[in-house]
Image 1 (tube, rainbow, N blue to C red):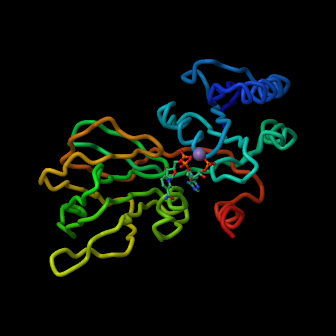
Image 2: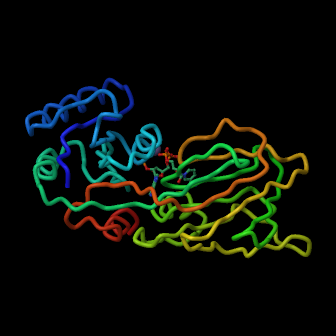
Image 3: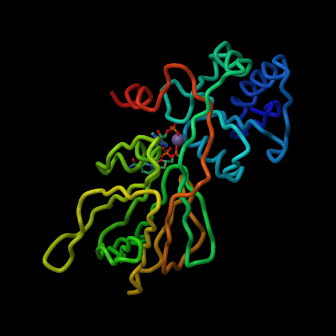
Length: 266
Ligand code: NAP
Ligand code: MN
C-alpha cells in the first residue's frame, strides 16, 4: 500500500468541535502525518461528527477512490460509519501507525437524472412526493416494465445504506460484501387499480433500475442523495446502478459489518 500521510479533517465549524479537532490534529502530527487544508491533496479523509457528517464528508469530497475515509464520532451513542470515538486517542494512534491495516470497501450507487446530471450515494437515493398527494412511478428493471408504483415514494439503498432509512421501512439489512442494491417502498397504494410487489427487493449489481415519474402534474418530487436534497425540481427519469467506485475505510479488529449491526441495533 502506498504511504498515506496527508490527512484532511472534515467537520462542522462549531466551537465545541474546533477544540476536539485541534487535539486530533496534534495527535496526527505527532505520528508524522501532515495536515492538509485542501482535500484534493489528501490521501486520508477524517470526518468528525456522526454518520451524517461522514456522509457529508464523502459527498463533499466527491467519493475519492484514492483516499481512505475514517469516521470519528463525537456522540455518545455508537454510529455506523464511525469506527473511532473522539476520546479513544490510543485506538486512533494504533490504527495510524499500524502498517498492516485492513481496508474495507463499501459499494456505492450512481443516479443519473434525466440522462444528464449524475450523483453518487453511499447510503441511498430517495424519491418522494413533495406535496400531500401521492405520485406515480413506472419501475423498470433492465428495461422491463416491472410495476407502476403509486404512493409517497421509493428508497434505493446501497448495502451499507440498508441499515439506515431502508431499515425503517422494513427493508432487509444487506451484507456490504454483496455487490447489489435494494429497492423499498414508502406507503404504496395497493388496490384493484394499483399493484406493486409490496416487499423490498434486491437487485444484482449488474442490473439497471429506471424510475420514470408519471407526468401527471405531481412530477416535482423531492430527490434525496444521502442526506442532501437535490435542487433539481422537475424530474422525468432516474437511472440507477451500482458503480465500480467504492469507498475505502479502515477496518479495525472486531469491527466487521455484522459486529456493527449487532452493536447498533441489538
Ligand atoms: P438524521 O435524520 O440526522 O439521521 C438519521 C439517523 O440515521 C442518525 O442517527 C444517523 O446517525 C443514522 N444513520 C445514517 N446513516 C446510517 C447508516 N448507514 N446506518 C445506520 N444508521 C445511519 O440524518 P443524517 O444523520 O444526516 O443521515 C442521513 C440519513 O438518515 C439518510 O441517508 C437516511 O438513510 C437516514 N434517514 C432515515 C429516516 C428514517 O429512518 N425514517 C428518515 C430520513 C433519513 P448519526 O446520528 O450518527 O448521524
Ligand atoms: Mn445526524
